Amino acid sequence: MLEEFKKFLIKGNMVDMAVGFIFGAAFATLVQSLVKNIVMPPVGMLLGKVDFSNLFIALDGNSYNTIADLEKAGAPAIKIGLFVNDSISFLILGTVMFMLVKSYNKLRAKEEVVPAPPSEKTCNDCAMSIPVAAKICPYCGNKEV
Image (cartoon, rainbow, N blue to C red):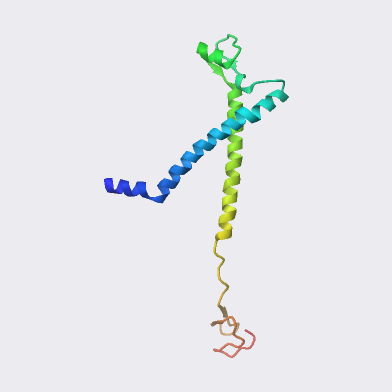
């Protein structure tokens, strides 16, 4: 069983998958930073200097100035702003992944082998296979091949 496990780990697919997960996590962190630090500040400014990360509805009936105050009090809340930020992160990540997969498929399609043209054709009269270059069927003598 240990030998099978070793073979499983050494396979190229497993290493490729591990590298993909690591890069995926790093890329997700990058996208979250992009949304939080670059996309949302101008959007908040356009909407009247709103900090989306501090948009929430406290469910305990009290009022809190920031989400940090809310969390310090341990109060339950619906955190609308964080959901908006995460939704935008998801859309950006989805768009980038779509473009990567689309580019990959386009490159893969170019690499596919084009099938060779047929080397034989069928005689119209006797239905025998003959070379494409043949002008007369060697089986029946048909000249309209």
